[in-house]
Length: 219
Image 1 (cartoon, one colour):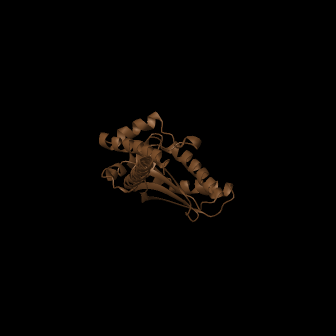
Image 2 (cartoon, helix red, strand yellow; image 1 turned 180 degrees about the horizontal axis):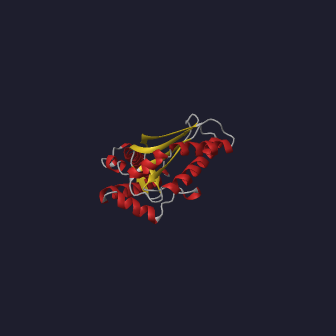
Image 3 (cartoon, rainbow, N blue to C red; image 1 turned 60 degrees about the horizontal axis):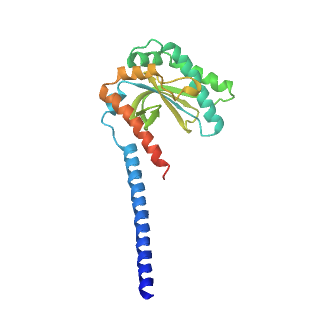
């Protein structure tokens, strides 16, 4: 009888050890995934400066995170995007895009202000072409690395709310609900602007982001 009890205790001890080892292994796996996730976000991409030289981005800063301020931010985005879209249809490079944007800066501000006033806001607009620090940002299957980029930056009011980004050249900005969709013509334009290595870096980074988002479900 004692032998049987000892045997059962040993089995129970083994089972407890296995459970503990399994829990430790799970914790280490999650920790490793989290570390890799942070590293991916924080790493410096050596190709980022070359990529940044070839694209022009569009950046709209909302007055605040209040729902109404966020909604009007998107209306300003749409209005300015539509106006610029007409003027940028035939552009062939970033320099030309930047010149058109600079030449029409007053019209950009006027369009944004009219949109604000139409929706009952009077907190003003500032717009400029500037070198802006961007976080990692994904558009469809493409993820642009963090770093400084030349951008048309529009600030609404205090500019303290969540921001909106897209790529103005080559044009990856679209109207309404399809703003986050990259169509075939834009994919081809991006492929022509970047080298094969740069294009692969942007596209592969997009797939990497999807993998990290999958891992997020376990955290």
